[in-house]
Amino acid sequence: MVWFVAGSAQLPEPVLWQIQSLRNVVFVSPISAYEIALKFQRGLWPETEALASDFDMVCDQGGFIPLPINAAHATAAGALPLDHRDPFDRILAAQAMVEDMSVVSIDTKLDLFPMKRVWA
Image (cartoon, rainbow, N blue to C red; front, side, top):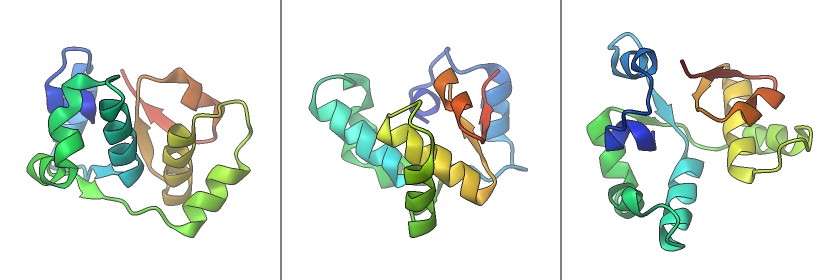
């Protein structure tokens, strides 16, 4: 989502087309808001200032739909193998598994989890 909002050239065109396609509904997890705000506050992601300061507005403008975290997501995240310990990624993976969705990410470590990852 960060690369989409920033207009980054690192986002592969096929992924960009899928995000922009009117046939697809694009969801965003509130865990992303937390991760962005935390990393921005620590000075690790200065280019995310707009997202860190008004995540909901940026999501609305981009047509992203919030996907709330529920107990099934949290339980699934807690049950995932400990091969990848990043708590943000674990929640995203669990949400994708429970809701039968894909995660858009360059992070190949997510492939350790039984979910679909979309990149190029």
